[in-house]
Image 1 (cartoon, one colour):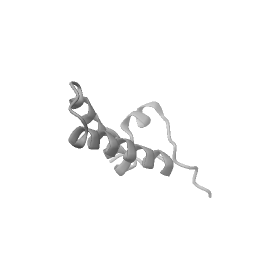
Image 2 (image 1 turned 180 degrees about the vertical axis):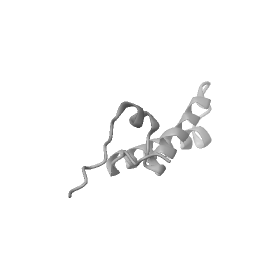
Image 3 (image 1 turned 135 degrees about the vertical axis):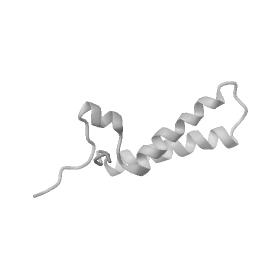
Length: 68
């Protein structure tokens, strides 16, 4: 569907941020705005899939260049 446009460091950071946010939502203290932590699904999915639709729209890629 989408071309992979995330490098390995970018993907790892996205997955970690997503897991931390979801972990805080499910296991953290009861905050009044804790439902906002559900946004952690977005970086988690984009990190797992290796593609970011926003990067595609803006023409950004953190993937290393392929050597020919």
